[in-house]
Amino acid sequence: MDIEADFLSHRNDTTMLLENVIGSSIVALLITAFLPPYVLILRIVYGDIEFSTSSYRIIFHLGVADCTQLIFQIPAIVFNFLTETDAVRTISKVFGAFLHAGWVAYTALTLLLALNRFFVISDMKQTAFLCRRTPLTVQLAICWGWAFFNFITFLTPAARLTYSSQDLVWIYGGRSQYFKVFRMIALYSSIGELFLACVAYIAMFAYLYHTMPISKFFVGNTTAQNRELRLLICGLAIFVAVYWNCYCMMFYPGRLVIMSTNLLWIINSGANPFIYACINRSLRTKLYRTIRCLHEH
Image (cartoon, rainbow, N blue to C red; front, side):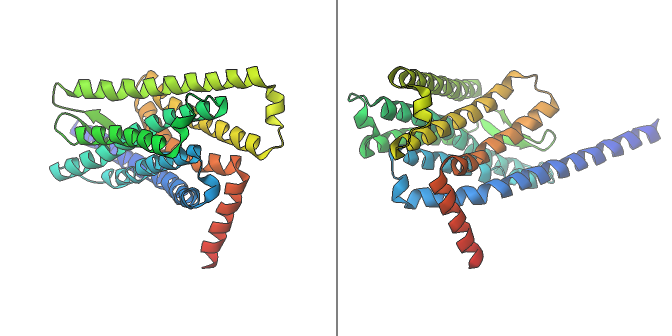
């Protein structure tokens, strides 16, 4: 019996090590594929006057939130092969706080982008001022302020987001009775933001359908119409991606589902630059030129 138990234990350890290697390799591959092009696109969007509209300002901040999540997913690659000590748990907690703050900022900015698209496309005088530089700066500050509040909260003993090498996923937890309150606030605020974003996009489609034929809008030849269409599709793509991250919580939390959810989190954080490049020809051209210039040097 002891020999059989030792054999099973060794097999389990070997299997877990193999899964950790595979999981770490996938995470490393995804982040390596997503992060560099994302940084280049953010650099282009930030410094090019063509992308100085209110929508692209929000998209830039969305990119910062995305990259924050991608960067703080990197330590998971190392955590998979470390013994869980107090120091490792502390470091994991700090990285988890950054990761959670990035997610919170992302959902808030997703709602802001949806509302911005609705205000711009509907062209209502009552809300036009919200798309101007100063009011938009205030709105962005509120989104990041909410993320900072969550960051501080998850640094306290009341709540934590730490990495579990056993399940290859980040897990929420907390010792304080206030943890459930903090967790529910973060969860339901994200769901509420996504729901309101959905309402805004539905209202946009209703407005477009009411004011002009959809087919005419899709084949419009003016630069303004093409730009609005691209931004609208971009906003929809962001919303759908975030929605599927939340939708995973509705499945039974088996190990495969949990691992897949974490990978989907990474994919969601890194997929947007490819969406931007596919939709916007000008951005795609400038990205190609930037990559070629870096390659030549």
